Length: 171
Image (cartoon, rainbow, N blue to C red; front, side, top):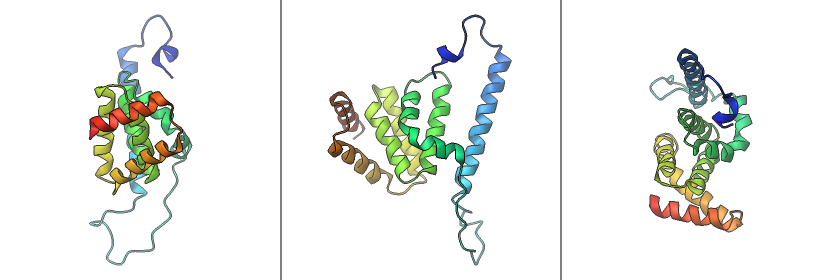
């Protein structure tokens, strides 16, 4: 929801309130990050000598509910509103890791298809840099997702042209 809708006209909230809300959001994102990365299991250094059978990854209901809304989250992130887009970008990264392998490729596809201008396109390259550190074969998966969307003919002409311009710019 745009800030103009949730911030009533009149006096702005006290800076202390803004800082407290910023802190709460950061703590929530940190907790989500912990939940997402704990699902992958212990690191090789922490793993016991004889590993037990791998447990089923615990679901994160909040991220499960967000999975069908990746495009909407990308649209909101690309608005570049104050600190909000930084939180949304971080949330998009966590959702992409959580919903890997398809979630990451879908998120990158939407950012590439919707980005208008270098600043917005930079969000796609930043997300790729973060995700490629923990997800294998992300580039081929993203290209395959883009090609599949092209072949499916689901993109309006303007969005198709934007996707192709952005891909050319990134390459």
